[in-house]
Length: 352
Image: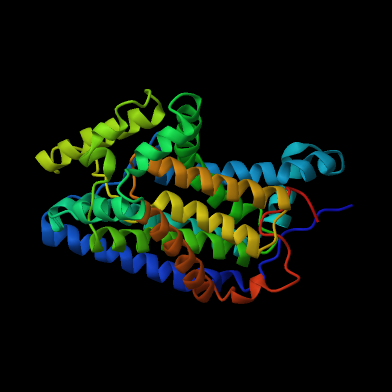
């Protein structure tokens, strides 16, 4: 059966109009805070390189993967792989879709980079932390026990620590891959736009929550509760973030590092919760929905187990994710996408 190019569900030029305006406004606010506070703006590097390089390359790779099945089928009729690739690019990726997808990626990029910078400005703008209040909430919720201790006693500190560390660190790959996949493999680009906008709004709302209740997290204010944990990828990440904090606080102009420590709310939880809820609303295959809900649960456990967050941060992260989904639906006019009948947001490459 012949494959058909994805549809938009809306005019491509309008999908990201409001989300891009919001992200751009957030970027302007970030620049204003930087100038007013005398702080440098940074483009935070990821372990795979700068995000302005990493994300377009990932998008291009997924576009290629999207076209490969049809290219292989058409290579003989078109006289080779290159003519088949050109024809398939024109058929599946007309200019309006390419432009809309690029604007969607730019929207995400602006929101994310602004979020990282606002997070880095936090200790200079809000120099008092609310960890004592959040510590008290943890004790109250667990009847005086420490959540990290409870989870370590229940789950153990051997194999479970390495498993949860792998889950937590996988988030660094999950976010850019899910964004690119939503933009490339959406049968209806409006669904992909909804998801990408929701993630972009997660960054903005997350930054607001950091400024509302600035905090460091249990691992940095009461590390004794996590001293029995083995060295994992999370241990290295926590140490790296603390070194960056020291460098930035010493002189933000003398380092390319950004400050990346903030507890309330949990953006790990908010983002994966967003993905799980949207998979449910858009009725992705059951196995994907189950996997995302399991991923959300394990991520929530890992954030408390390793001391990244307080219990209330997890609940706040879920609430923030739900709010981001709703606001993104309004911004992309995708409220009706959850009603019966829409195609899945992510389709297998080359499917009809």
